[in-house]
Length: 576
Picture 1 (cartoon, rainbow, N blue to C red):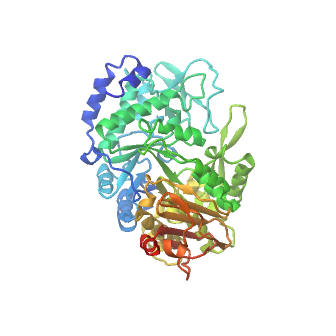
Picture 2 (picture 1 turned 45 degrees about the horizontal axis):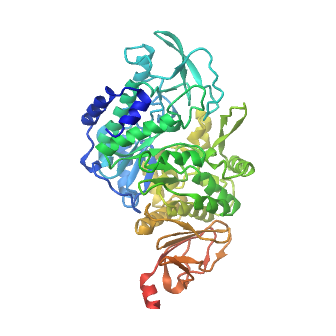
Picture 3 (picture 1 turned 90 degrees about the horizontal axis):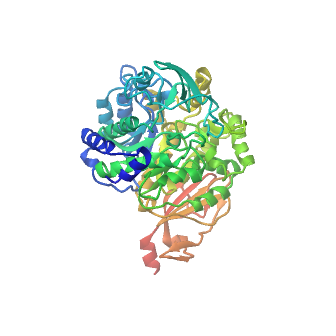
């Protein structure tokens, strides 16, 4: 077993673990389609959605969602990330009570399988913590044999000042157990108790969950909040070497049993820490969430300058062809501020916070070791973050700005993820956040399925305009190998108002300002050498939004305009 040394490092004598692992692999066989590798391509994109994102009277939410996705997006987005659909007690699914059951209010495993027949699926592995109301924790409270150390506890009053805190909530919660009161580690809330992965029994239980997900059709497994997994007193308890080793063990096991499955690490942390989860490029995460992209893109459009985004993009590199960034702008969570630290200055981050508040958003904070607190995330829909809902600005211009931001997302090297509410141009639901006391619900509204379909057929209205534009971009992206995750990227020097990216034979130009921007073709790579190539004969238009120019190819880009060009090989031959 390739992970034998890692198991020994973490658990000492691993002679009992290895046959137990083999039994789990045998118990949860991977589907045949996962037993061979499939390279990621320009066609890959992932929709992020809740299982009950759409409602329709008399029908299970999973069935409503599955039918809708089959009708509207299957031809442009081939994969779906279903946010936690297991029985849960809080945090909109992230306090899991039963890891291998489907919430009956959503549907059944058969419904999940039906969706998996049409889409690749991503499941959440919420294994840093479990529900305080779930069966696992109940066994711990009863101190059943094999469960006494299933969750992280502390005795007396250790110094925890160095521990990194993602939320401004108590780190420890006292519970009454059969052995007396115990202080249990609760990183995210009192209802989310941290699993003790240092227990060999819990390691095997968690591994069983992961393999169960693979056997049920998960091609992608999202490791939620994984940076906090291993705890050692006297440390920050984040990004510890042991956490990386756990992921490496999971990767090694999957490489043998299901090499077609990919691990994605979710670590809402500064960029350098985030990309450490690639490991050496062959032994850890296949993909990492590109958490710096959402705040940097927002900064770009609020300032009308691509300077910071372009400089950061030039630093992006991958340790191997086996890895890729998971690029996104919005998700079920807020826009993380931590990933922007060290890239944007404190005043620039403050500007993002102030803008979000002025656009009707909310701000989540975290506690710092020095007793202060700082912004952790912006709770706001990405459409509202870019465009003030109270503004009298024309909706068409707001849509153009939103699409321009996504044109950058879709052009960057990696696999794009698009949140359901972004795909359909949703505005924030402030009332839901205030009524529930959960700020993140501002961007988690459940929609009426039939009503959404009606709105998508109302040409020129917000939802139809956003969806139509994103469909155009997604279809164009899928048609060009230049957008494959394996194709390198180069940021081209340009005025600060333009973001210009070349990827193979594809050139992306995005205007991040409300003013028309003229351009001349920059120095571009052609056959390995930089040459000034006449736009008339070498490049042709792939996409031009919002309105195609009468000149093809054009010589200017509209306000918040998008121009994707592809090398015209026929034109190049004629010129030669």
